[in-house]
Length: 302
Image 1: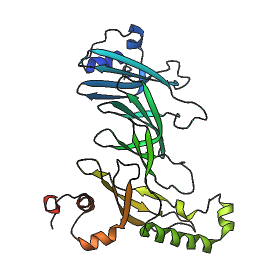
Image 2: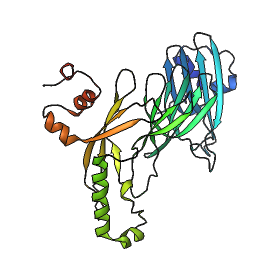
Image 3: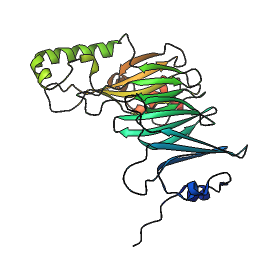
Image 4: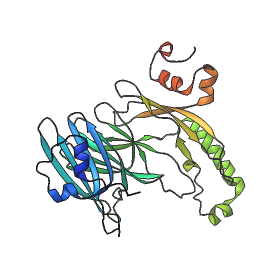
């Protein structure tokens, strides 16, 4: 069987019935790879790299092209995929493009624990390179993103951040200090467990022995209120690794408010506590109820 023809910029533009005026014929005919497309009404965006036809390496230049359907204008940009020693600039494969009214967010994948979230203006001027991956765009363009983690670290402690492309504000959303009672109890129990194991084990296994950096993971998609000022999500504390320092699993519901302020506030409640209050509610219904949604309007029995 003959191999499928390589995708080119020209073939993709043809699929979307876009004009190719102003684009070099050589660019249109060159095979591309590692690309993503977003066709968002008034704006078409494609991010890609030109394939290395020699097969020697993956090219180091990420290219972007956008077409404004209202103005009928193409815009192009290019950015280096890697800059050694510069945080947030080890750009992996493109996985998704998210346009807003004023910006374009480009999600790239580095490994299962890391990515780079690139931010551009609508005319593709670079704004920021964030160390992580996008979780949700709130009304007004505020981005909630997951901070990258070191893939082979002894623990993976999830951190969620807020980024405002208009102001450049980039702050921690969760977890925030001071710790609430649920986290304080979990840290105290982890500290006691680490003390029983003893410092020698941690030294021999290159473990930081920091009880506050226990493994935690986002379990459910974020849910938000209509205004984008509050959100809720489910976290899982702990891990099941067969080591002396494995910490117990605990599902925790997090409710964050005032997320557009400089000091967002988040509270934690054990999922089991909320399930005892509402034994027939699923997790989604519990999360939505925290945001002021009428429980009777949500799916499921009362």
